[in-house]
Image (cartoon, rainbow, N blue to C red; front, side, top):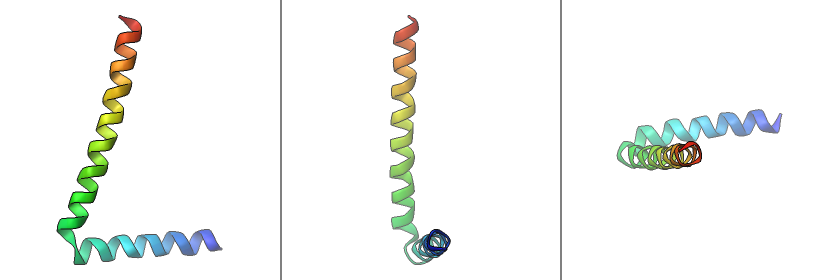
Length: 52
């Protein structure tokens, strides 16, 4: 029950954040995307060096 309430609260906060602060929300998502890309690049470099 608590997990369901926290999930819906998180979704509501996300919608509120995007609706009222779209520039800040875009910056946050851009930062998260950049971090994920850095991690993926690191894994790619690791496996490239491992095989080569």
